[in-house]
Length: 111
Image (tube, rainbow, N blue to C red; front, side):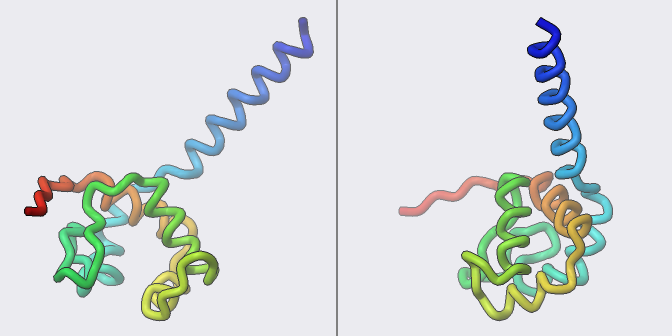
């Protein structure tokens, strides 16, 4: 019984640690977005045009994963985004994801 309890405690602890590590500060993300993202994606992630994906309201883990892939040059290999992500720290990525996730995605209807 004690082995099961110990395993459960370890699993809960690891889950908590991963969740804490993955969360960012949206206020810091807003400041970083003004400098790094706004020209193409808009300060609130509403996008400057059809050539740039809308970031507002996207899931936080999706945005973090995408930025980490650009930074590492795996799976996503857009030269512009790779250059933009290259200078981001893991905390910057978490903060940006928190900011864009907190924005209203709005309603999109395609006719």
